[in-house]
Structure formats: structure tokens, C-alpha cells
Image 1 (cartoon, each protein chain N blue to C red):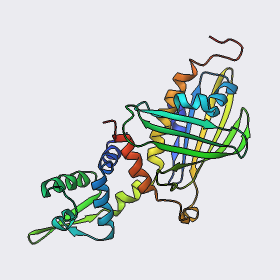
Image 2 (cartoon, each protein chain N blue to C red):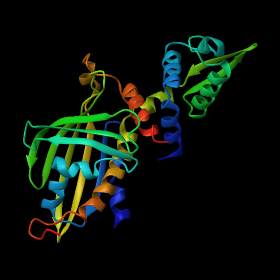
Image 3 (cartoon, rainbow over the protein chains, first blue to last red):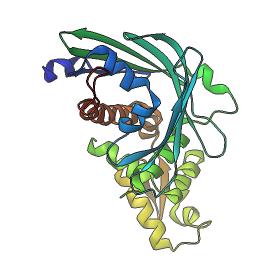
Image 4 (cartoon, rainbow over the protein chains, first blue to last red):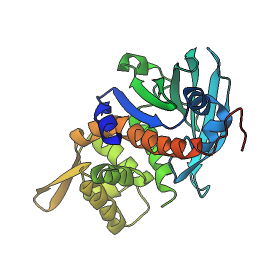
Length: 159
Length: 111
């Protein structure tokens, strides 16, 4: 089953799709995906930890969470954004960008999550898209190369 | 993580290397021109260049006695794509989510 699902995964330059199955009802998956107290428990790679997680899960509400290497060394990366659409428990759309310590922001991206349940198993289709570069001309935004610099500081501060 | 991507991240994880790369995107330079503004030794700069070269971020050509270093635009374009990072990030996170879900009680039956 996992291999079949993996065929559905894909990327283009501006869009990535991940398909996953969870052995849990849709309502529970939706809650764990969006509730900031739950998000704190899973939303980073094993080598990192979430330093704080807060959010207001309603249309127009914002969320914010921080990531750091598990050892606590290195910079903290803050991910934040706002909710555009919420259709519990089947769909949620929200924006995401990185907040840099100097106050600048990375380009904004959009996440859409679709959940379908079949006999206690939930299938998630996860879309992450980047807006075309017209939106990146804002002075407050930095390029992804700079953002990647900060990210790699983070990723490698634990090696 | 694919090996090439791992190399990319590793090479970008150092501030000096990022600065070297930034300068090379503006114009190509000799090794000594690259080394000039940094307080570290030429040997240390050379090591940085080897890392960048291994990640295919820079290339070099000989001009008489000098080595002229240039940035590789194709690899840079790949870095600018945020996709590879997020793909890895999300896949690892969803693995964690899957594990975490088994520990979360139902609203009816709290464990």
C-alpha cells in the first residue's frame, strides 16, 4: 500500500505533493495536524525539536512555532502563517513562511491538506506550493538561498 | 537525503563558504583573491573551496599559474528550489506524526 501511495507523490519547481495514510479517524488526524499543542509533538525531523508552538485555528488566525536542533545548539527557526480556509475535518488551507532573526521573511508558500477516511483509516493529500516570484519582490523578503543558509545552520548545528 | 543534496546542505552550512559563494556569483576570482578578506589561512580557504567543489557549487580552471574559481549556476538554481528541503522535512515530520498518533487517546477513551 505504501508503495502505491508513493507513486502519487510528486514535485515540480513550485509545488510538492505528499500522500500518506494514517491508522486513525479523520477527526483525530485533523486535530493533531492543526492543534498547536499537538503540532509541538511531531512537526519536525527527529534531529530537531520544537521550541514553542502557538496558534489560533480559525480563518484569519495565525500560528507560529520554532525549531532548533535537538541539542539546543544553533539558531532557532520560526515558521509562521495564517489560516485561509478551514473545513474540519476534511480540508485546511494555510500560508507558511520563515521568520528570520533580523526581521526579514522568506517567500510565502501555501499549504493545503485534504483528508479522506475509509473504515478508520485516513488518507491525507498534502500540497505545498510556492507563489510565483512576483510575490517575492517585496523588500521585506529574502531569497530562498539566504533562507537555506539559515536552515543549513540549523540542520548542521547538531552534527 | 540524497547524497548530492546532503553535500549541498553541508557545504552551505558554513558562513565563510556561503560568503565565498556569494562573492563568486558576482564574478569569478583567483584563490588568493577569494582568501584575501578572511582571517583564516590560505590552506583553510582551500579546504572550503574543496567542499564547495565537491558539492558542484563551484568550478575551477587553470590560467597559467592561477586557479580561477567560478560559481556553478546550475547547482545554485537547484538550491533556490525550496522543494527538496521541504520534501525531506515533511516526510520526516509525517513519520513522527504517524508515531505520535498512536499515543493520542480518543476523546471518548483517554488512556
